[in-house]
Length: 279
Image (tube, rainbow, N blue to C red; front, side, top):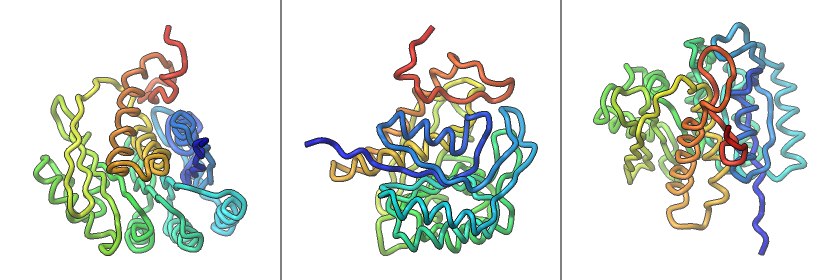
């Protein structure tokens, strides 16, 4: 029996340098055996060093993009990235509810690697109110967890445990929902992420890779999870398997990033490290 290739859509911003946002997401989907679609929720003027401008489309046109795509293409998973404004967050949440979109992976993008803010403050409340209830999984890093929880970011793995528990309380309690709290901002030679469904707290350690090429790592991980969730469904512990495989893909993409020469700042990861010949 031939394997069905899942259709996965990224609803996010566009990074012209290709390291983050919709372009990076579609690269990731393609690398992991999913057909990539994209809905543009924001345009940025951006490179590996800075974000110099953000332009958001009218919400009517954003709605039209989503409605036109979902009316024709069977979507098996959704990755959410930079949404930019409260109005855009509300529109996306409304359309995902309308189409009962499956496997919604929400990466609450708030700050770029350069330190530039990408999510307006008034959009955070809308994200919590309207979008988190529609999400199957959220993938915040520690600063984003601090913003969502209105507290300082966790500074230890022990504090991460409590933050993951509180984040899970922000999701619907009556159905399967997951938090992947990323610990990359903590110091040390290892990186520990926490995967939590309200019952099982799974520690996911990995050695830290010393490189400046970390642009778009959050985008790549969340889109990798979205690409793999429908492919792992039906297997043993499918969500955990999808997350473990997605992290392995990202770590290898980071390790291979030195083969690329893109920009003078935080360079991108190597999305096609498995297929492009090395020097």
